[in-house]
Length: 261
Image (cartoon, helix red, strand yellow):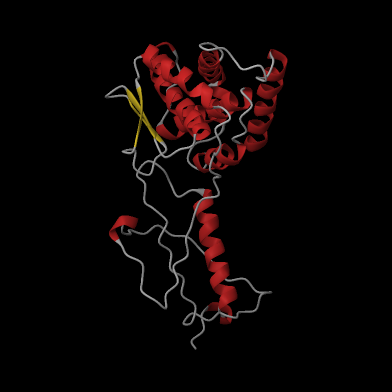
């Protein structure tokens, strides 16, 4: 067995990583990096290395194939599935709110469709076509959260003409996901396990300061969406009261402040 730096074995430890994708609109996320680190540590343990020692890891940019251009190695290779720690949103407790946001999409000129052609994305907002597509595979609660996110993209574009703040793609993602998080908190849908890692991943390429700089815009978007959520067929009897909604909004602000810290 050959040894690498500090005596670490380099010949009998092989790690197959196939789930890190190149995306032109975003850097590798914090969750993906954490997953790679865990894969390396697992391989280190399985190779019988001293558990009190840790392998030395590093990062460098490299050109690679897209995931759909490669195939897993045959046995005895054991590919390690890598997933960002973004929890799936499940359940249908807030299904009655989805149609209210579909109506909002029609009102602002961005019709909504539920389809299977969103690829790996949960939803898309096309400004060129002025359409919003939501993945049909999602649960009702996930549809609601994704629809708020994509509607926020549409509303950002509509509000940009009378708002001074110009946002790049990463900054806009931070703004619209913070709107989605706050609106979901307001109606009593906890998406923190999904939104917080997502916000953290975009914070690697855009400063969270943008949330302070666009506080007025963020509030405007949230108010527009929350207004749509409170009309139509009327809230069910167990919906949060106005006071409870205020508490939920304050709680959401606290969570975003904690993330910024």
